[in-house]
Image (cartoon, rainbow, N blue to C red; front, side, top):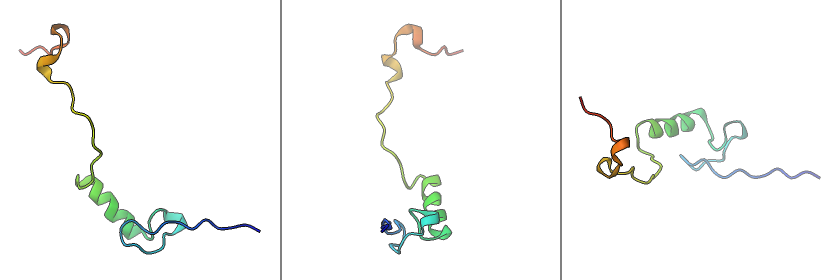
Length: 64
């Protein structure tokens, strides 16, 4: 007896996910999600880079 794993609902609309498009239910929801990433609506938090003034002299970029 095999059991089919139940997919979580589509993160965009909440309908049942399509196994071929997981985690989405349709290409439309997949495209909506992609558009949100491309428009910076979704972001991944990251640590700030070091301040340029805190870099050692050998690593500072040269200004011409």
